[in-house]
Image: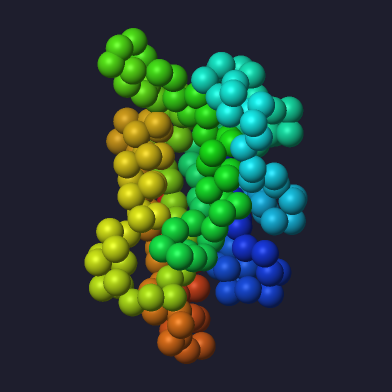
Length: 196
């Protein structure tokens, strides 16, 4: 399977970097073709410009600096997002990647009235999330689990029918210990190693 791994954390020495490396190793060992994009290392511009917003619904009128990201998304059969959850959601840079790359004409098209979104990323049959949360799981349920809602109700409908979501999250990072982190790394390796 062709997997697009999107990594989003500013520090190369972070636990998120260790998660990225574990994910990459597991997918490679399982003989998947993995294309990794490090949004911070690439200095991806997350800001949707005035001109981009003005041409947002003009399919094919996309900024030249995202062309390779669009091509990677269209090549992939699965997307794996590796990021820390901050303020109950994805880092701003990752949200900006969604804003600028999952565009009309790329991820969806607007159908006839009542203007329903028709999926265009039918090449994607799997979405994976590897993330960490500082808060305990009860707080995620209490606030409505915002990042999970974005993926389940925003991204998944733009993909292939029956697209699977694999959510691998570690809660309670603020009170975490090294042994628990090691177990979570192993869980990431085990779960992604079973992708088919």
